Amino acid sequence: MASIREGSVILFENAEGQLAFQLHDDRPEVMYPNHWGVFGGWQEADESPEQAIVREIKEDLDLDLDLARLRYLRGYRDGDVISHVFYYRVADEFRKAVLSEGQRLEFMRFSDLETRKVVPRHRSIVAWY
Image (tube, rainbow, N blue to C red; front, top):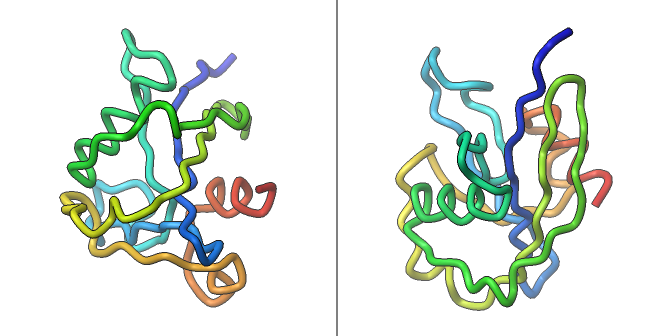
């Protein structure tokens, strides 16, 4: 039996109803290189899903999330991966975001993803949302 891997992802939604996506780096060691995905990452052994997403966003965007605005939506299972899905309505936080991982950041509607390469699990999560 395969071991389960757990991670956390976050749906950052702006006032226009668009979600934040990150274009992954185009390097062979990157999972789904040159694909769009929502922000998140793998949970470390000693972390809760919430601690993992807070750490990942600090690492990827240099942002401190307001925990009062962070909402847990559900656990999404895809084979041997469980993605803990969080929601966060953004105001002006992204004006001071510094992208340290990935090629770029863009807010998009689900329909914008039709012509783009998207991490399959992330496409499914956004379609569910």
